[in-house]
Image (cartoon, rainbow, N blue to C red; front, side):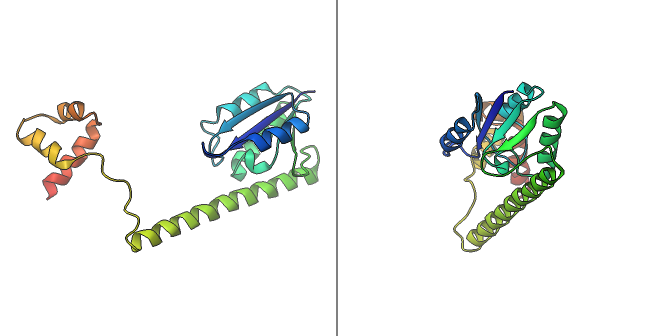
Length: 185
């Protein structure tokens, strides 16, 4: 029986050191780390490796359920994959036992709370952005394409959208978007 640890943080400025220490203390022989959002399983290569590595009798160990998934649908899919492989899921900070009915219910509740927390965070973020926009503080990203340059290349140099895109190192669709806005004004 092998204990495979999985540590995840959301951003590159966060560290997995505390999770890794807890997973080592729990007896994990292999620990996979990743810096990726937990709101989806897409692009989480280390999670995919951990799930692929599981064999019957093994355990996937995380510190908390929210390190594994932030949505109930993703959590249920991951737990189903673990179960289908004949393995188990364990948490160092939460009493999770996927082998019992109570443990299955508890893990679903933890998943619901993780998803709820993510939704609340998203709502607070959108409220903060709206408030900043209303105060004139948040103006979004500065434009990376100068419409005057696009217009000059189109009118004076008679370049087509593809040539303009190549000259400026931008996508052709961006050129079409700028030209459409120029035509409206």
